[in-house]
Image (tube, rainbow, N blue to C red; front, side, top):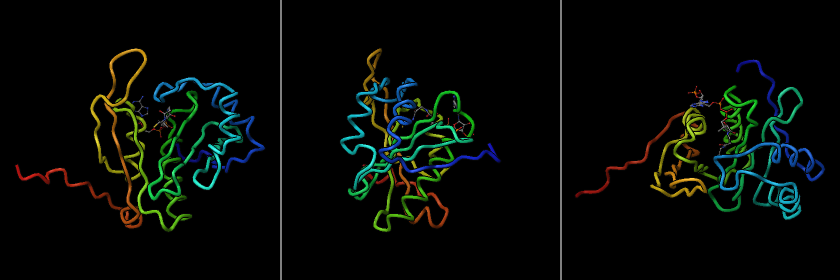
Length: 182
Ligand SMILES: CC(C)(COP(=O)(O)OP(=O)(O)OC[C@H]1O[C@@H](n2cnc3c(N)ncnc32)[C@H](O)[C@@H]1OP(=O)(O)O)[C@@H](O)C(=O)NCCC(=O)NCCS
């Protein structure tokens, strides 16, 4: 949504309450653990899950209210991954797409040694896949029946990534999947 005032504020320990309220107040069906309890968030916070040498977290605010969170991790591993969550009441308003774009700019600007960013999601998570595509991520992987669920058969998982070169030139270079001679 154009004109919406979306800000990304780096999470600090002082904001553990805001983060816990946001994460425990929603159900996350596309995550391995759809419900998170407050103890878990506090334990994770104390253990550096949200902020450390290898991870950073940002609270996504619209008009001063926390409407989402973005956690990037494996920053010391060459290829970081990220977890993005927008509260149900605010989905479908373009915030997720803005967040993917902002995160991509942030990582490539702040970490000159990082040349690619990856994201894996469930095959049926169409909003996430659309946000990734719109931000220049290319589909690189399709893992059949790789995403177990408690209620039914496993889903497929899909992997996307963006390369620094593509980010800096505004292009999307798809992988060559037809590289087998027969
Ligand atoms: C996935 C998520 C981050 C996307 O954020 P969002 O703010 O809802 O997404 P946007 O409004 O930016 O929309 C992204 C795209 O999805 C499309 N979309 C939105 N809702 C949709 C739906 N129910 N079905 C299909 N497409 C949908 C939008 O039209 C847009 O595509 P477009 O750019 O081609 O028009 C958000 O929905 C979310 O937090 N979901 C729950 C947690 C989650 O799944 N996180 C990702 C884990 S990897």
